[in-house]
Length: 271
Ligand SMILES: [Zn+2]
Image 1: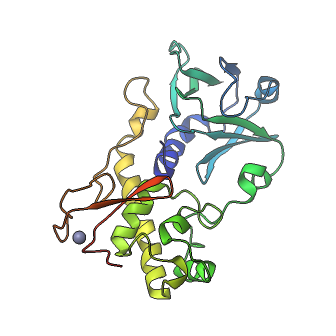
Image 2: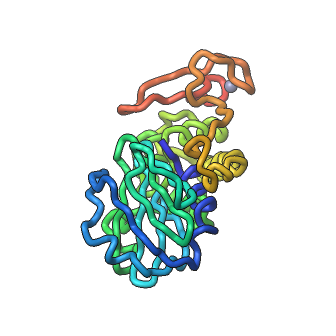
């Protein structure tokens, strides 16, 4: 599943081809994504100019003259810029043409979304209730500390609560807790300010490292060949059950939290 770093790398990959360009054609081959692609979308977008390509949480926002195209990659989606002559594959459901190039959405499992919002995108129902961006200066240890007072939920659940902070999926929650040396089941409300500060810094460094790893795959977004643009990284605990911790060599443990697996090191992240 594309996580926040993949979405941000996608944004950086597609933005140069779209910015200040006029949309000359819209092709919807399969409107039945997570939500139906709006029927009148081609009419709305034809002739519109893309002013900027932004990101909010895992939503890509193509800001046009009269509104914003909101794109979500869902479970399996990817966006690439390809030549207009590139024939579509079976899962290429949506194209935007800008000159002689296409922005193409491929989404085998069709959990992605392509939506239009005429007003301020921050007020769209999908975006209105979202918490702070983890890489923004607004995400601080003090903020996390204040927001978690009285919370008995495990810190891992709390980190993945998008009303508090967006874009931290299972991979980065596990990795950040390991870096901060905090047990994933620790009650969020009991974390000291110092540990909240350490955790915020761990979240940032984990995401920044992922962005750096993904930067080398940028070319996948502007060429028609190659992988969809997700990238492989070296994880410390994620999906490493039984493997030795890279710091203390104790075997990494896997536990279930809610519906998800959690990996942690019992030596580095004591209760
Ligand atoms: Zn360890």
